[in-house]
Image (cartoon, rainbow over all chains, first blue to last red; front, side, top):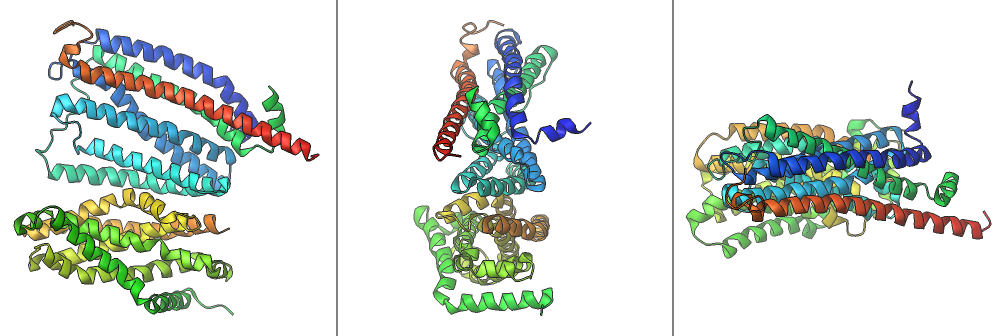
Length: 244
Length: 226
Length: 58
């Protein structure tokens, strides 16, 4: 029963199935995102308070959910790599990082652009945006640390440790930032979250959430192939894989 | 012949303190940095005391953070470069004892020293004397937590060439909670309100970090040393 | 549904809404492009490593 699990630790196996999964994940993701965009932009009724600006939710919320999910996945992969010494796990962690960071950046910019019409300012030290900014710093830290080592194995392990330390701190950081922000209420009124959501508004949001998630999976498969190759350059299976 | 953990700890601690005091200029540098950075803010903003008092918790804490980080890079680097660290790792004593001894010694000469110097800086920032006890307590807890976080960062970056900037980059996001609560505790003390909530959280953070960080820092050293 | 200038005007918020969606699409395409480029580079490096190993008579 566990053979599928053991096979996931095998680089050539992962290299092959990632190639098989990617097009399906990306295809379904594409369909969902296209639907979500059309429905969200053209057909969902405009919000009573925020007007058409609320439509930014359709990219902001999926991006922010994914940015946090990706960091968690990176930390879990890092832990698996450190505990069981599975190289594929390190490859996953390395592949996730830039994808997660790009979604974090997207969250920040869309949050900022949403903030301007809502709060009158491009940047506000609202707890969610601030936590998201700190998350971006954590991503950069992990990526920079991995890149700073000449020995990629050592870099993988150091970055893995940092990712785990970071993920432990994420709830603490979030709590601290929310607490800090609540002290200074009145600076911003932070309803950047979902407005009164009803089905016609919610459906495209769920589509976008699922679409982004599947897209993440697909891109991860693509990136993972490169990461696995880089860590297995000398292995014999690579000879066959490179020819095909 | 092997000695117990407690004996090893105190031996290593004494060694670290001895080595530190042999270079008194190295001890003073972070403190001087602390003073200089604090001076920058009134120069950049305003000499007006009421304005300074408003900003003072933030200025104090940011300066303390930066000054502590400055010396963190040297935590393991000296011993790593001349091979002592490897010898200690091979010695049969657990590497964790080495990490704890070094980090605590480092805190004693930098963080604790900062706490002692803080009344001077506080006066320059127009912080009332009544706020000093809470300010110093919060700084003590905060700098200790920061020393532990810095130990993790130092362990991860010890072999790297431009490790010190990367160390700060890694440690600063993790240090933001203690900055928030430390500055808040000081702020409430200045305003005469109870700082208990913030202090409890700082203490909790300190205990949490002090218990887990040694494990992480030791693991980091093992990764970078082998 | 179509108030204040029609679909493209987004009720006056066009200069906030459209850049968001454009950026979102940009990030999605960047991820695709970057992942493929990364894989291509990895393949090239693997080919070079194999060629060098071949020349060394392994």
